[in-house]
Length: 357
Image (cartoon, rainbow, N blue to C red; front, side):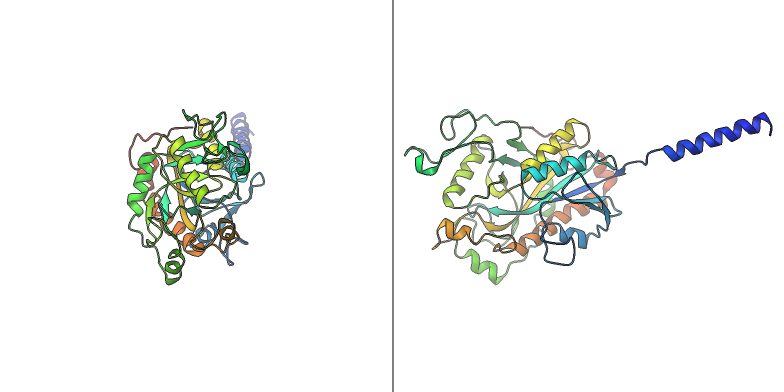
């Protein structure tokens, strides 16, 4: 063998070795749907928040996620679904595990939280779906037992480092308040506002027992802001507290409409991942569909009403799952169908910005 041939042979060997040792390129993810709970299997049984997405969008490729709550699922179009588990701790840790996974490239991905929620009957009706602009945490705070609060206090729940309820000035702690990309949320609402949501005689009968300006309306798509808390609270007095809590931390800009458990955990991890250059926080949407009202109907006490609040037993459980998928899928389909445009430019405005806490 001549020297030239030997040299060529060695080059080929080196190239083959480099190819064998090369790391596979990360999978580009276009849209991440974030669900929080599932009742059983991902398919084929009583649905939770994940199942409709898996079955209808054919998310058949499964990637184990040993550092998170549940495997992630994808289809060939670049759509991923993540199941976080319930509560802020599960959500934060699972989103961080997914976001740091070297198998995936989230640099241009849109994140859409799509789940069910309690709703304030003053602002929203059962089975409706709302896009949020503000998410405010309700776990960070001081609390005094209601039997010991001063008579002039409206609540025994205080902001951290304050001496009385809603003491001014408001001082949200890191991770307590998130202003989402409002132009993107408005774009999502405009795109989905005419999405038909089914009403039924059962829903009409259930909501007839409630007071509230929006309680008697049929299901619809709207915009409304969320109180996020791992404590499942209930009752008309807590509803009044939540509305004031939202106004307090957003300077009157947010309007309380829904209450859910996980979203400040999800957003905290997404913010940290954005700091690390892994995700774009301007591409985050939160959609919550109303499975139940957050307070009691006429004729029941708060404890009696709370006893009826169980996953799978909510008054509008299946309609809210359907609404979360139906409305969320309109946005997912638009993003995937026109990906070259949306990969480069965030809808709503080319220069959309997101404010941190």
